[in-house]
Length: 474
Image (cartoon, rainbow, N blue to C red; front, top):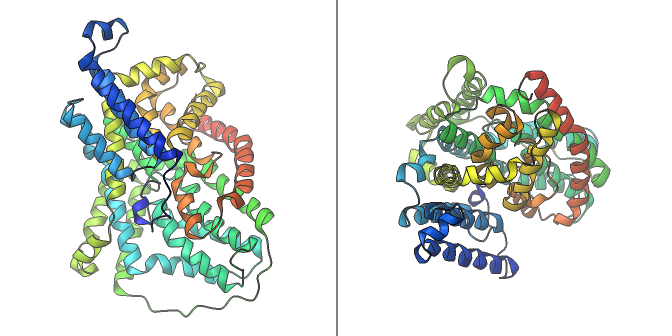
């Protein structure tokens, strides 16, 4: 996920190839922004271009380039995109800032407030410790429990980065409590289980990761098509959510299994606070309303916003203290990428790009699913998961015509590429969690590449068949 500012910063990197590439992106974007002023309009017209298309495309390339390279914090890049669009008048303000009118952005806002309230009250740590206190099996059982804890937290903390920051220190303490050494395979497996369990299955829950909410926001902003929590969950969680968790549970012991150094010590229980009790009721009501949104018609965003308002009431603690604990960087990022999709549609970039790739999309059936998935995977390799839906969602209408699929089916075909991917860097929360746990990425990559191959062979065909059974995929 993209909410990296909520986590302790990673060790600073020395200037290198990434920074040189970033400067190259800036120079190319600046040159293209200036080009329409230097070239005759007739010359642009000969190539089917307009000044708005050229300048708008350069601003989008600038933003996507910085997001892909990670040179600037993601929310700073979003603010830079807003600035460039307004200074060069690339689109009207209501288009550039349309992300703030999207329900997905307000869903993220409410989720950030809820996450901060859960962490402040100590309820999140209590839930984790309660689950871990039941552990009495071997290493495989421990892996299953850690993955399950991460999956459970995805329903309560709608931020994979926040979940990673919460679970990783607890997992590290558990590993030490069990007697695993600092560089032992057993400890690495404990950290990896916490990281993977709190990240991969959550892509199948609409409210639990940034890409999910970016896609939902862009879909509503561009097409006026809302995505319902229950429908999204039913299509994706039974196969992608549970399937990714099952593969991790099977593979982690194979790569990291090690006998604990000693028996686990029991933690001292502490009494429930009033804030924890009230917040538990609020969370339960929020989950019920989210799961039944197709019945009562209240969008998940407004449910989350209502829960956030309750968290700010004086009976829940100091509102000022809670506000200081909220990191709004992910909120700005989601608004930025949602607005970028609207700008791409406004200037005609989505139509042009869609026509270029539409010829590679077969008409109907599993070949269309595979082609749409391959396009999504290629974009994610270049931009990482958080920005991928902002690039792909504006193209969905053109891809729907090429494939013969309904628009919503094309949008849903993005999701598998977020769960089944080959490289850890594509999901920033995994990088942060492993870095916090001091686990070298090279130690996890063999297991993760094995997961990718098995998931591609097993989960993707099952996901298509499940979607076809539900009537989502033709």
